[in-house]
Figure 1: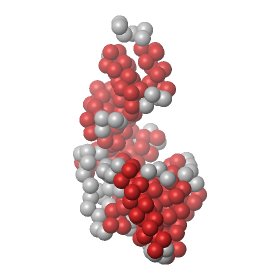
Figure 2 (figure 1 turned 180 degrees about the vertical axis):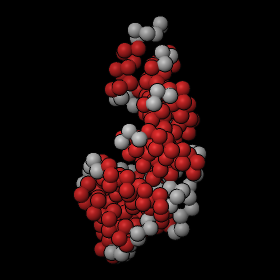
Figure 3 (figure 1 turned 135 degrees about the vertical axis):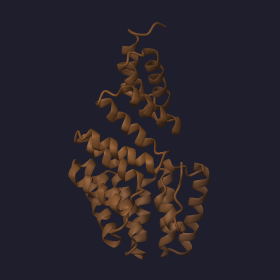
Figure 4 (figure 1 turned 90 degrees about the horizontal axis):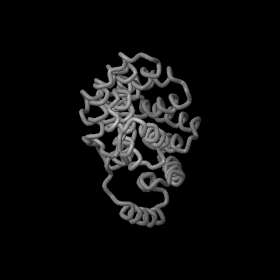
Length: 266
């Protein structure tokens, strides 16, 4: 996956996510956490150290600890928009949606041209059912950064939910034009193509998403479902099995695998 060069260590830490290939093992991250703890003990008013530790806690799934670190950082750098973005992100993960919305908005007030904060706020609105508000925020993000793939993908999802399938596909097309490695764009375009009964094209998109991410559980599942519709039952069976290898708790794959026994000769 391509990675944009972000100026400064702080920006780098705040903009990456675990899914973007941070290469340290958990052991290495824990080792770095211990170093951060020692540094903070010696310099407890250094916001950047709290930000660094917050990101490391985020990497290992300690979201409450990460939130606490970012809130400590805020005390010493109250005008740092990235800190409010990170607080908003942790609050979203912890399902504190009102607090998340408030902090993304603070980030936007401090830096109105921060595309990622619009996308973060849009995701909160979408989760809470405010699709129009989410659409507006994703559109604002695109106006700020016309190469922000995630904004196109998220706006495409909203258009799909609103049954504007043509508009959704247009946004997914823009996303893959900006970044040909955007697996979520191919996957979501596949979902929309299925709703238009363009099943063969959908299979191509799911397959391409899988080629970019071989552990893409939902892409395997939905390719299997599409193969099932196309009566290609053996291919569907293999995709449901692969889905369960990735996530043994996937109920949809389990149910379809049981159903498909009536169609596949062992």
